[in-house]
Length: 430
Image 1: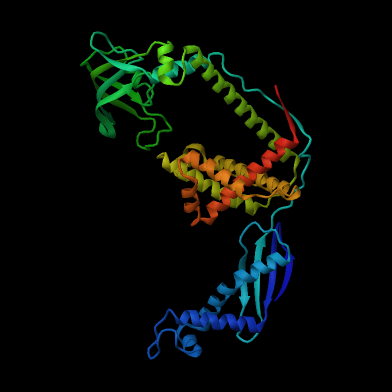
Image 2: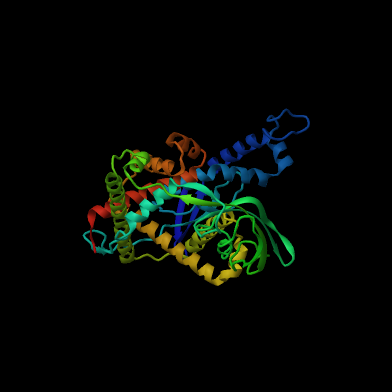
């Protein structure tokens, strides 16, 4: 096999590959045998028809295509390895000339990884803004805990307050038509923490048991239902029940109920410890991000537009799927925010992601940072905890999805390089 490598535009290389006639004939005959196993020809048992008959039946070009598809992956991989090509995409065949009995010529193109010039990435001293604990963070945590253990008591002798839960019937109309999904019976609505349309819960405050009335609201402009965006609506309401929250008393008995604490002070100390640890984690994460940001900004790389376009398409597809899961249509978002603005954002995000990845790969190569099995196991355990999946079950799922496994491996390498940068640089929390 003979391979000639030629640089083309940006980071694209062309490989002109010549395959010896003997190897090509072997591949051609192998293709004939494989095709013969899958077709029925009168007068011959399956797989037993001679080559000339198979050629007449399916055509020589179909056989050549089969032969090329079977032999080229190994040949391309060998050419890439022997020429030490650092490719970022799967090489693709642009054309080939195949005459049985002659050397076969194949032209292949591939994109190379852009060259990264690292700036200073060790010995940096970075100032990081402190993330202080809010003065009332402890009290807010205690309040949330008390709410979690609160009880509800039915109220019959006063109007609703903005801290109550109102059990209501409601039915909505917009432009004279009933709103799909806009009605319910005995719905418990938390008037202080409602996720209903803005202004809905507020108009239920000050109402009495068994009151029947109408309220008017306006749907937000960004509402997911196109028909209701910015539209005025009317809801008929009936108050069926009013419930008041009763908070438990913050005492030693309560502390013992919620955990392994003897006193309220023990409970407060535990919450404060959690807040301190959370502050430390956030500061560490921010420090890691600032150090990595400084390393990336000091590095230089020219990213080809083809890589940016490919990454932007991937981001767009991921973004559209997440929006769809939230009931938001991508086309509607484009109309609302403007296509040019969205595309600009996607392109900027794509450039950032590509440069980050290239810098990480370069540092790993220069510093000979290798991904070990325990690094991957640690990442799998982390993902498993996040999604509630046992590591062994996750491994089983990934066995049939090499692309996803490759993504997780890259994430594990990212973590390892970031840990390396944290060890090699210092930061000051200010």
